[in-house]
Amino acid sequence: MSIRIGISGFQAATSPAVGLSVAISLAVENSDIEIIGVDYTGLATGLLGGDFIEETVTLPWSDDSDKLASAWIDLCRERKLQAILPCLDDEIVLLSSREELFFEEGIKLLTAPHGAIALTEKMKISSVLAETKTSLCYPETQLVKTMSELEEVIAVSSFPIVLKGLRREVKFCFSHQECMEDAKALFRLFGDPLLIQEVIGGEQLSVVGAIGQSGNSLGQIALKKMGLDNSGKAWSYATLDNPKVSSEIREFLREIMWLGPYEVDVIIAESATYLLDVNPRFPDYIDGFANTKLNLPQRFVADWINNGSACEVASQDDIRVESMILVREFADLVIDKRKMHNVLRDEFIERNVNAGKSNLYWRV
Image 1 (cartoon, rainbow, N blue to C red):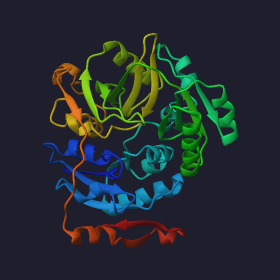
Image 2: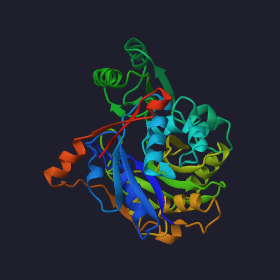
Image 3: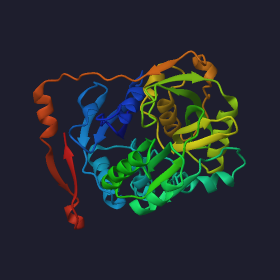
């Protein structure tokens, strides 16, 4: 019997699309999964290619968790989806906070529990780490809400420093003027408070994995970041073996009762290992392992289909540790202009009118 799953995150304007990478992984030798591609803009280029995507849908975005969840539930009813796998950070936070609505509809929301995600917020994670049995540290961080507060902090700071948005965006600032200009841009863009963080020198790693419904590890791999740009984004990765860090990450996630996919960024300094971020999703390069025994999206979905039944856990040995290098690339997409016209010609459909509200989505 086929399983219909809605996957989001096909926008590739600034980086490879996370949802497309997950969809590619699920499509490998798997004829039992029908993938419905979902995004919040008709310009999501990932929706335009790939015979493995059965249908594509564009939903209207909302910062209101109830409205966003309602739009997804309407979509699941209309397209007969049994599960959804959100791949965008903000979306995951909002939808996971309304998990009970999906449960009532019999729809599986394939995300980490909202409570566990909340413990990894940038302003909470330092105190959470202090209460765990791990030796992981967190860089010294200060929250600023206004430009005047920022001015006070950087007046006594040593450069370079890291400027972060609460949810996304990272800027490395090497001077007072650069920091003020970047902060103004981030305040305009998000309106949220900003974080000022010390710069930690060392080897930067991403630890990627998934935890099944029974709390069992479905596999994990550590990768060294290479080709970093000025925002700290890596453009290539090399697999490596670091049992100590891998064990520390597993223990931390176990203690906060994490389930589902994750990407944890760390820096190995001389004196300690620093945890930087916990992303509640697979990374956008996960399809690089699609043809190995460590196809994590497939293992994660199979765990759900089998109701958390333990399956053989792949290890880094299965893919010959330190033998793989992943390199990001951009490609020009050439398509028939009529196909693009169909994507941009969104058909406006009103849902749930009888309930006294308009839950709207667009059909592509």
